[in-house]
Every structure is written in C-alpha cells, then in structure tokens.
Image (cartoon, rainbow, N blue to C red; front, side, top):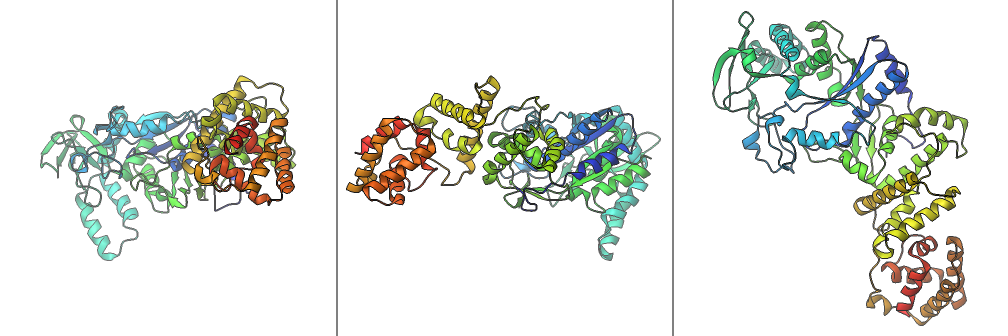
Amino acid sequence: MSNEIQEDEFNIHWIRDVVDEVLARDVDEYVLSTGKSPSGSIHIGFVRELITSNVIKRELKDLGKKARSLFVVDDYDPVRAFPPSVSLSLDEWVGIPYCDVPDEFGCCDSFGSHWANELIETFPDFGLDPEIVWTSKLYQTPEMRDAVRICLKETETLREIMIKYVASDFNDAQRTKYIKAMEDWYPASILCPECGKFQAGAKGSIKPNRVTGYDIETDHVSFKCPGCGHEASVPLDKVKVKLTWRIDWPTKWYVLNVTCEPAGKDHSVKGGSYDTGLEVSRRVFDWAGPVKVPYEWVMIGGRDMGTSTGIVFSPKVWTEIAPPELYRFLMLKTDLQRTINIQPERVPDLVDQYDRFERVYYEVEETTSDEKELAKLLYPLSESNPVRNEYLPKLPFKFAVTISQLEEVIGTEPVIAKSIEVMHKQYDIESVSDDILAHIRKRLDRALKWVTNFGSKREKIAVPVEVPESIISTITDDDRKFLTLLLKTLRKSSLEDEELQTEIFESAREVGIKTKRAFTVLYRILISSKSGPRIGPFLNMLGTDWVAKRIESVL
C-alpha cells in the first residue's frame, strides 16, 4: 500500500523518538490531542493522526504514566464550502457554524455531528478511545471564555505574531497591504445574533464578522455583521464568539492542557499554523505549548484525499473491506515523514502479509530472529484490542474472495463448511471454536465487499443459473469426449485440489485436446468466461456434485 517504501521495510524507530520527546515534558498527566473540522465525510488519512496519538498514549501507559487522548471536533467552524455530494444550499448556510446547520440525512443533531459521528462510530474497530470534545460546547465554558479575554487583551501581540508568520513570504507590496489591514484587526469573530453567521461570503470571498473593538474595563465587544449589517457593542458574555483559526488552535491547547498533538504537513510546515500556535502559546499564554509531531499525508490510489474535493475513502469503508488492524499496521510500520499510498486493489495481498506477521508474533511460523523481535514490538500496537494469549487461525483472504462469491450458487452452509474444511487442512485443528467461526463469517463478508467494489474483472466471479446456448453451441465433439471422461472421474470419488487438477490434465491428454482448450471449456461452462480461479480448488469450492450436474446439462 505504499509506493514510497518496500513491503519488507520498517521504520518504527519514530515511535520511541516521539515518546521520549513527550516524556521530557514530565507532567502529571499527558494529554494527547487530535482535531478535525466536520465539513463532510472525514477521510481515512486523518486516522493516521488518531492512531499516532493512540500509540503514544499506549506507550506512556505501559511506562506507568497517566495519559489520555482527545478528539476535538471543530463543529463551531463556519461553513465556507460544501463537498460536491451535499444537497444543502451553500447560499443559505454559508457562514453558519456546522453545529447549527441541519443534518441533511435527519439522523443527527446537526451537519457537523453527522460527519463527526460517522468517524467516531469506527473508533472501537480501530482500537481508538479518545474523549470527544465539541468546540461548540467548549466555547461556552468559563475556561474558554476567559482564554478568549486573554487573546483580546493581547491583540497587539497577536498582530505582531500574525504579521511575522502570515506575511513571511509576501512581497513588499503585499506585506505593506497586510500590515495596514492588521491595524484594526482583532483575533475573534462574533456569531451575529440576527442572522446567526460568523461571516459573509463563501470560500475565496469571505468577510468575517470580526470584532471591531474591545473595552478591557467594561468587557464589551463591538462588531458589525458584513452579512446583514447588524452592529452593536455588548458584554462579551452576551454574545457567541470564536477566535480566528491560527489563534483558536493554541487557545484550545492552553485550555485543554495539551501535551502533544500530531498534525499533517499542511499545518506543520515551517512558519505554518502550528509554529504560529507555538509562539502564541509562549508569548500570550506563557507556556511552551504541545510537542509538535508532524506527519505526511495518506493518499488513495496516488491522489491526495480531501473532503472539499470529494476524494474521500472513509474509515467505515475500510472496516467493510479489510481488518482495521491492517490499517494500524501500515501506519505504524512507516516513518511519519513518509507518504503512504493506499491502493484498495491490493488489499488481499496486504491482508495475507499481516496474517503472516501475526503468525510470526505467535511463533507458529518460522522466520528470522530480527522479524520475531519486530513482531513482538509492532504487533501489539497494531492490534485494536488486547492481544490474545493464543493464536486465532485466520481464513486465507484470497480463498474468501473466491468462495464468498459462490454463496448464491451453493448456499451459505456449504460456503461455511468449505471454509472450515480449509481451516482444518491449513492449521491442522481438530475443532472450530465460536471465535474462529465468527472470524470466518467476518472475513467472508469483507472479502465479498472488497471484490464487489475493488476486485479486478478476473477476480470477479458470476455463475449463470444455466449455461448459455451461445456457449453450448461452441462445444466440439472432442470437447464432449473430454467432459464425458471428466464426468466419470467426478462421479467416482472426491479428490483433493491437486488430484483434481491432475485429472483434468489427464482427461484432456487422453482425448487429444490441448490443456488450454480443456480449461477454457470448463471455465465457459461454469462462469461464461475463458479464464477464472485455479480450476482444481474452484471445482471443489463449487462441489463436485454441482459441477457434475453442470457438465451433464451440457452433454
């Protein structure tokens, strides 16, 4: 899943490096924070941040430290744009905070809570358990309100910081214009009590309803809404206020006492919003701010994901097609500074690799001492739940991909029975526990979902109810001799996969047709295609009785 690194390359030293840096803070309780604006479906790339935070917390707790993690939902952010799939009118809702925009699906309290909950519901699958902080509620607390007062009192300092960072790459003309604009700038906006908006205009032409004055003695703020024109000077406690983004972030760090927060490269670049926030922490709130942990983005099929662009591969979709543990593994084995490219079509290979890695951990597969040591460190961190004492055998994903597609043909019970048979053969187990059976069912469901949505034409199998007349008409006399001979073999006794494969070769040779022709005839009769899964195992999956009846229908 990464075109940046080889599958056998691991860069997990970053875990210890980050934990050591966080430990150096030497606080009574370590707070690991993550945050996201619920502007639409949140893509799986953000889960890298959540997993990073989770692993740091796990490691700290293993060292006997008190630690907890947060997921800050920025549902107080105003609407600037909607993703392409949203049916709501942007003209109607632009500038209104996500917490006040209705859920177009009608299942949650707001637009913001809908998309946040879509992600939050997957947390148990990915082994995540952060406390949820809604900024719409945080801003109503006395602690946040007091922090906003500090920012308003320190407006001049904040102006200096903003000019230093925002205008760092401006040319002379741009810098002069920006400095002029900052002369009457304040670090907060008011939610207009008349129209309910923080700003007018959509992305690209935004006009914030920024504070125009603050009286420290009376604690009054002045504002004029650029949307509806309403203006007033009122006590700060009587209006809803929100800090501008680059000030909002460090203020939440301060109020929530955040020790460490991972952040994507867009925020972590030198002089970016994270560095701005750290200077705000030092100069305005008189503390160091959190440990900065930058990470590279996760891509999908070589493309950058983005809620606003509609390029989204959601965590929910991942849990439907692959184990969440595999995603944790891919995130953790890769250095944070390396891009990871998710290629959904490669899921079967990657599941098989993770299954092998698991067997190495449980020492049921021979390997090198280095790989054993790596598995001992990385496998427990990759798992969503506490590690089991004993190995739980897994149904091979590629087998599940094929047989899961046959359920409508041979029925559910035969599919489960053949899956159990494979487990018996592969792992030499005497009985199948309820846990193993539950895993078989889950793997079959994921495999079917994967092949339906991401499988190649070759991997997809469709078995027609009857052999089409157009195929029957192409069968020659020699083909019929081959099928008749094979039918006798199928009727005689059950054969193992390899034995069945050999019998097909022998039957073809005996009647004088080429092996390739024999395979083509069988595939066309079974699935109306010239090729398909390996023929011996496939015939056994379908069941020799079913295959025999199929051949008889042609003869």
